Image 1 (tube, rainbow, N blue to C red):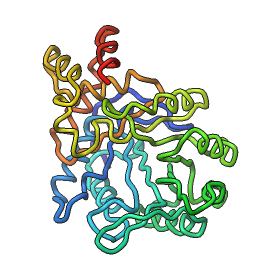
Image 2: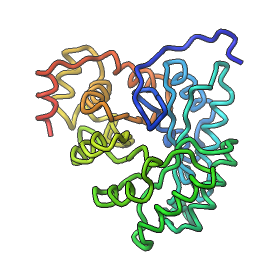
Image 3: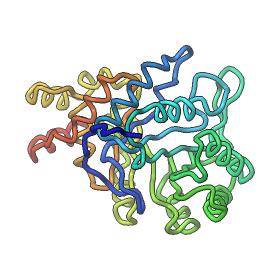
Image 4: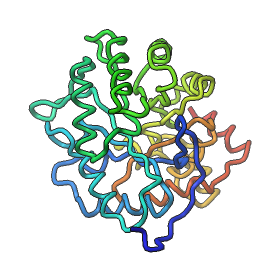
Length: 295
């Protein structure tokens, strides 16, 4: 399939027994608005693949409407149209959020919903089993143990290979570890220059051999463009190094922990290339001190 197609080799990090690129790509922004540009999104995904990205994160609930699977389908179609090899690519998805009239969001962490949602995601993605399936968010109406038990059952049934949890606290992580054991490989929580409260969770991930998937590593879709205005040290070091504040932010995240894999969202080729270039930006101890103090 690849016909000698040349791609870059990025540094890798561990995701359970998988090895993935140190920087992933969050697919949410590909389909976030009505009338999203399919061609532009496809070019962004192909640019990420060319740059060596092998980890892509989606969810069944991502999209501009109440329809399910919009983002999963957009991502998998973009991947399948790539002229190079895809044998090292890992696609992660999430379930547990639901969509309703007027594109409103709700949560359903029941065993019945997760069993159905995981199977539907696997079908949309054309996979016999999902490499990584994540509980999108704990459901306050459902006993957390029920949700974890459902994920355990999905592994036992062969629908899911590895499990992740998202938007969890340390107590929930402990319960996840108790129920899932070695099937649990990741935590996906927010971490960025403007959201730094997850440092203790990152330390827990290191202790338990879990990957910490940092969503919103640039401060979220709305804040990403203005990152240099909200975080002065990031702007200053960006000027000194002749790079963007966004690239500095990803390099800072990579330096925070060997367990951390930032998954910035992007729908433009330029954004993809800028964030991936962060692997080549080695921040000095003094720069890291300045950035750590810019809270």
